[in-house]
Length: 162
Ligand code: CO
Image (cartoon, rainbow, N blue to C red; front, side, top):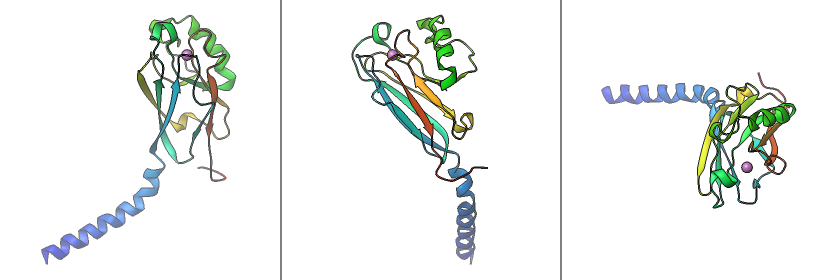
């Protein structure tokens, strides 16, 4: 009888879980990866964030050999309209501050600077992105963004999201 009660409790739990799943799925962490090399290039021009991601975990790998001070890279995400100003302000922030101005509210997310063989990652919520928004990622080390930039797309499979 007690076994039966446990079995029923388990079924009830499974039932409750099944109801909860859709809400949790909206908050899942989606992993994105990008690499930078010794030729001042990212290996991707576009990153897509699927609609059902609640959070993004972006990993930047430096696939080259050069040191951070010579050919380091970071990954900075802003609205495309903010990119130039954020980049200009970042140049004044120096390597020590990853070439990102402290407390810059226009920066949606950014990693630290990595050198050859290193990796780093950053997490940010998709609530920081809006449907149909125009977002650009770039490396904010002075001179790099001319080559090292691309678009981040927040993809929506459904027509709307509440
Ligand atoms: Co770079």
